[in-house]
Image (cartoon, rainbow, N blue to C red):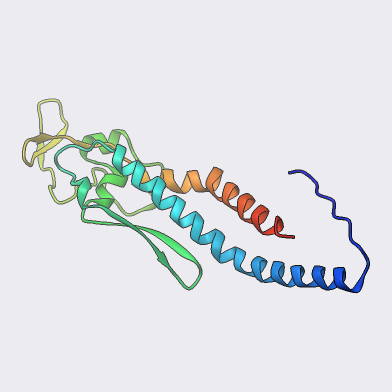
Length: 173
């Protein structure tokens, strides 16, 4: 960030102008927390949508049923992913989910296979659980789309938005 220097003429008119700009700045600064939260949530939704667009689950998960939105809360905003297969896509299912687990899976009360609506009771000749639903499946690895979105926002998104928003407000002085 470059330093800016302002020369101020110490007249009544110039001081009145400075006071007016500071009042405007005060109003803009008071709006910053909400604007930053809203922009972070919207950026997170865009990132999450891209994560889902790149997902390649098998025929047991309907990725098109997953919808994302941003909702205002009493504390700010939240990013929401909804649909019947969100949990299965996030944490994985079956053998593939078990062998490619979600980084936070152990924090939730999910079974080893998180088998979703098509619970596997079959074991193939290799000792692996499988089921048929429009074809043979051993499940899906964890997509971790929500986890990846949160990590992106923590590591980059929030910092970039805060820097830009604060810079925009200060540039008005």
